[in-house]
Image 1: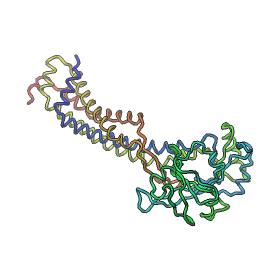
Image 2 (image 1 turned 90 degrees about the vertical axis):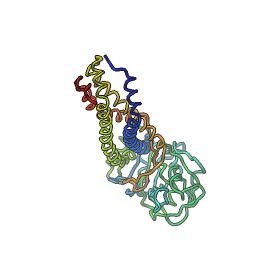
Image 3 (image 1 turned 60 degrees about the horizontal axis):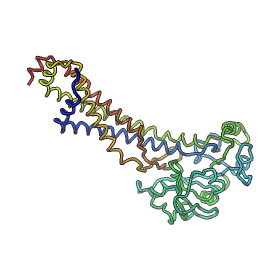
Image 4 (image 1 turned 180 degrees about the vertical axis):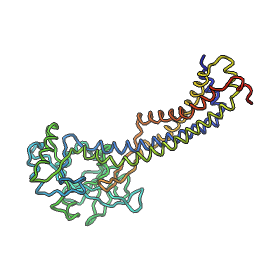
Length: 389
């Protein structure tokens, strides 16, 4: 014979203060775990959503990033004539020579400022290679002018990078003429300007950073990359644009490890809190347990009832944790990339999968904290339980 579920709910309500405090402890633990998972998911999403199928990033051989790559204009002239590169309506190869550097800008989080990536490129074909990126406000910069268009996250997190204002770096002022929206991609953390103007400010008119090319069809991407690497005359390395940015998501690994470690430590404490609550319930309800046994309820029914009570407590804690972390969804923050030595801004992402992970984690704590007290209640002898005061 099983104990009715209403019996467990009544007991939790009678001890509502203790119930609430224990559930809140579990909820805070779940909230910490979910916030870390939301941060890591948002950061990985920013990198994984960057890049276009068929785009190949070409850099100096063995270079790990555009920032550390040296790519000459002469190499670019040879590169864009290679077979396999798609051509536009005018018959010109879709190959964009680009220069990547960093500038120090004031940030809403750091008074001393933070490094932001600036990318120099030609509008044609630079924009054609990134068709999903659109202007959210203002307009694109014009070639030959000291104008920049900034990513939406740069505009959001850097007070200087506002539409109509002047940014001061390099050899003078740059007018912010627009804000672009690259969806969830890492491109939102960049500033774009005219290639020749950016190169002039960096005194790198001949040695630049990289080239982005479109290979058509997409099935030819890997053969194109292989043939380019095997060409010892050019001494170039290449990878898909998507792979390049996915590699940068490794910066999320230390945060993920630290966050999960903290959550596990807190989970142990929360499990002990739940265990203490359930042991106290067993001690206070000793006669009640004896009475249940006299009425014919088996030891397994008593064990199952107390374990179920602990799981309900954990479920309540899990729901509290989910509610506590919901305001973080969409919150924008930034992290320094060890690859580009600049900030990558991204938004916390709380997905249904993350919420489900939080609930499973809470139930695990409830099971861990309730199993021993439930077993203790089930082992009580009937006469001993009835004698307890």
